Length: 409
Ligand SMILES: NC(=O)c1ccc[n+]([C@@H]2O[C@H](COP(=O)([O-])OP(=O)(O)OC[C@H]3O[C@@H](n4cnc5c(N)ncnc54)[C@H](O)[C@@H]3O)[C@@H](O)[C@H]2O)c1
Image 1: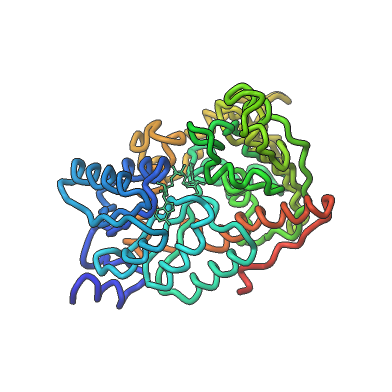
Image 2: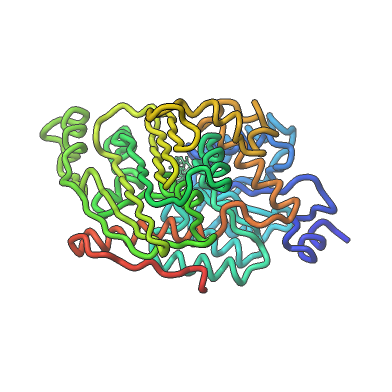
């Protein structure tokens, strides 16, 4: 039996019998794709069989990286926006990692799943509710797996909290606060003043990047594991931060001053079927320092946790000696997730508190071992649907919008 035949015969276990690595094709080798490629090349379970980018120079640079690290030349694909489909026809590729701009994620993932290739998709998974449905349906009809690369779920502290939640240390969970607050005004324009793909979306209302904030919170609350999002209402502040930046960067009379934004801070309230409430903030245009671009706070009937600006603190009714926040560090040692225990030092500080390398290694081993997707398509769809639903709510003056039940597909 060839390796390909093994894959087709046992779709949930990527050629595990034939190989100890998954043959990946990398689609999009810009900033994020290259960063993930560098980490992937440190993981023996990841083989890079092909790379693809619209920009031939970026594809060539990625080929060089693979060649230097692995002494092997991957196939190189570049040119038009649909050239990635050549990778999907290749019998040398088992899985694709998608790190293109976000408006490309859903259509690329659907095409890959339909071609029988496993998908690891960068965040967000999709931009509209309709795209979320397309993705869920494609994953259901495919024999390949969909894995959502929500790396913040892999932070050591977030995984330790998940462990503690499962052991009941916070009691019944009632409320959570989270946010993505990251001054990215420098990413909205190219150096010569054109709008980047991020800049093109500045006038879209609502929360355009929810998954880093909502991902860990959803895992703690057991979304799709006993609870689900029911409705969202969302409002935005007026805009101001971008104009201030543009004035300083390009000048008060520059054409860039005509670029407008829908608003600076967006806040959504999400209700769950079990009556929990989540407050979710998004802001990429306000000036501020950001030791961390995300925050995650949790309230239960027996305790409380907060992680803001890289400082994690906890208070537990039955354990804390005083009514005062305690540093979380000792709890990490006690409740460290097995993945982090096994990988101590493996990820180090390499990208996002060491989580990115651990995440990629977990994804590759989940495919090799035939485990369920670590972050599945229902998570991806519900978390990403916030983009569309929050925008609709803002336009409707904050009126609640219902979440579809993607798991009922
Ligand atoms: N998880 C994280 O922490 C994290 C961090 C940064 C970015 N991201 C996500 O990663 C994605 C990429 O972000 P980035 O900063 O690397 O952007 P980027 O613009 O630097 O890179 C995107 C690359 O995709 C290529 N591309 C575009 N369309 C393509 C197509 N049709 N076929 C092949 N290649 C194509 C571009 O040429 C470019 O090289 C975004 O969706 C972003 O949301 C995630």
